[in-house]
Image 1 (cartoon, rainbow, N blue to C red):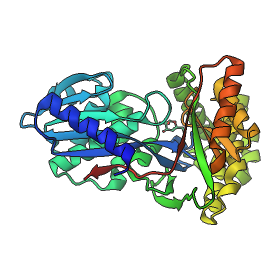
Image 2 (image 1 turned 135 degrees about the horizontal axis):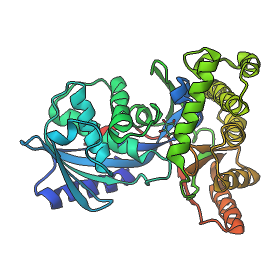
Image 3 (image 1 turned 180 degrees about the vertical axis):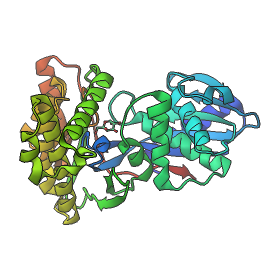
Length: 389
Ligand code: GLA
């Protein structure tokens, strides 16, 4: 266990003891993620390349006899309880508890006899920063319930189940990337995921060996209509695929892009399609470079991804664009927004010894424009969900 994991795991264990008395039967951790490249491609059945963060959500838990789930979270210092009726139908538990109830619901819906449980949750994954705090919570709860109940569900099937919790129980129409990252990522690697058949390849992403670092910049931009805009982008992509007569935009290759665009009459749909098709190719190009250990060379692909999100997919905001421009001006090899958009985080690929300089340049650019100061953190690709010793 790394030191940061130990602290959050201790908080979950201590929370368990304070709330319920005694010791938890175990502790399960699941990380947040950043996506190196491949944005808004997952629900188009394309490619993504996320890696897990060293920031984790930890659940300390044990079974209880009643068919009941009692959940305490350090974030609100609140305890909620729900029973079989609340997970008989999607949407009955709301607020943060919905992510927990959603996992119980999805497991039961898939025919698993979920044991009643008492859970205590602590987390280092910031909420609302686009680092997948919800997937981390779902994945940690799922790992805990599977172990407590002795239930068998192969790792490759777990993301789909956690995603159902979020899509159907919580009601957010997100893709498969975040839960896949939280569950299937490995330390030192990025997860190359084909979102059509969910096959994965662990791609070595050895920043240390290349003398590089990834700086994550929390834009602190307020999320502006993120949910509605996300759903609207998804609808545009589906409309584009329908108009082109393909199952998903994944089926349009970059070599067919011009012909495909010429067949679309709507200018906005053309831009949305161009982003998705070129972004899939950028993921493939990034993977090819990483397989050849050419980590430095992926920088321009990251920046091109950002430009495509800014101009074609139109999901960036001024704070995010400022952070990208300032990082590049300060010498980053590449920089892009990561996650769903309309706020959230930027990642910048930098020489390891320049982290402070780049962070200071972004902070100064923010101050000049009167934005709330950004948060910065250098990260390494970290392990996915696991039971802690
Ligand atoms: C959010 C969603 C993911 C994915 C990204 C955009 O993080 O949860 O499924 O669509 O946005 O790439």
